[in-house]
Image (cartoon, rainbow, N blue to C red; front, side, top):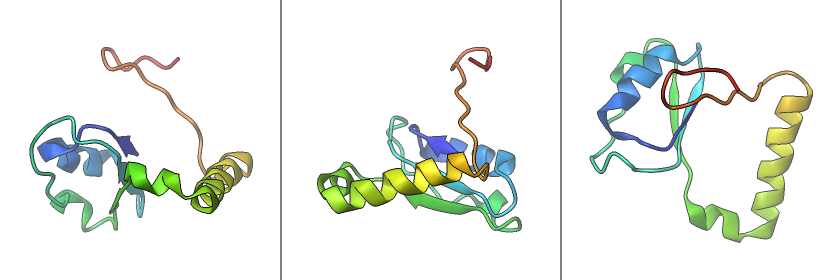
Length: 90
């Protein structure tokens, strides 16, 4: 799960995250602190943060790209894009 907003809604996202899934927080658009999603503890949900500075190290960027591409290629992950309003699949 990728979340650019953060804030209290992360707890709701944890409820929708698969067993032992990860929520990647890459923004703080809510403007409020983001608590650890308590509802995800029982299902092993992890919360991971992405910082822009992580993309300034070329070797790290290549590792990230390979990881994502490999996950998509072997079917472990799938790319899903939704619209903010209506949650329609594109």
